[in-house]
Image (cartoon, rainbow, N blue to C red; front, side, top):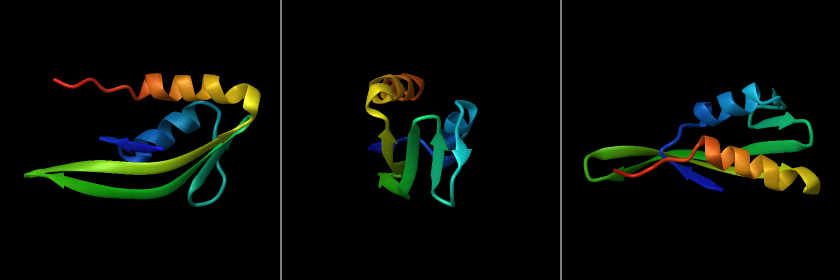
Length: 80
């Protein structure tokens, strides 16, 4: 999954606040789930810089939909 407009530490903070613990330099594990940070970069759009984070979410089948829904709702962004 690629998230634009978010920095890795924002995602990391939410994961840690929701039961996760660091499991190495690039991953966080919680009860029944794991998120691996694959890439973090900045993209330019004209004079503006936008952070981009690429992650992989792994979760037990019965937990996946709920975890993904909560994740997406928390990081939902609206345009103006």
